[in-house]
Length: 113
View 1 (cartoon, rainbow, N blue to C red):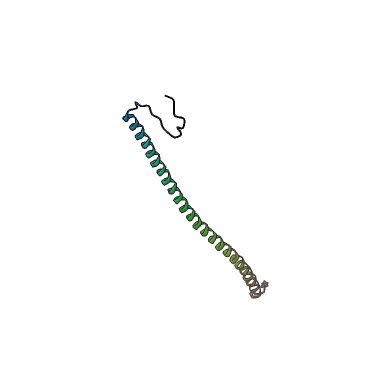
View 2 (spheres, rainbow, N blue to C red):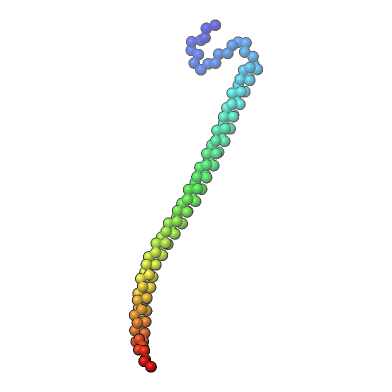
């Protein structure tokens, strides 16, 4: 029996194919489609979990970055303050040296006995 000429998309089965063979084939294909669908849904759920985890990690990293930047700014302010304090201590030390020299009594002369 020659195949029909315009058989695009038509499945031709032999005349003696049993109902159970066709049913088994259809059920097998439907099972594969269900399995593929559930597997794809599982992969999508994993991808959504990863995206949510990435979002949480990015938020946490942004918070840490902000804290580090704030700490650096604080350290820079402290460094500038320390430079000013060092200069003030140097000036105070010089003044104390001058005062000590002015207050210091003249050296004693040894008395000859």
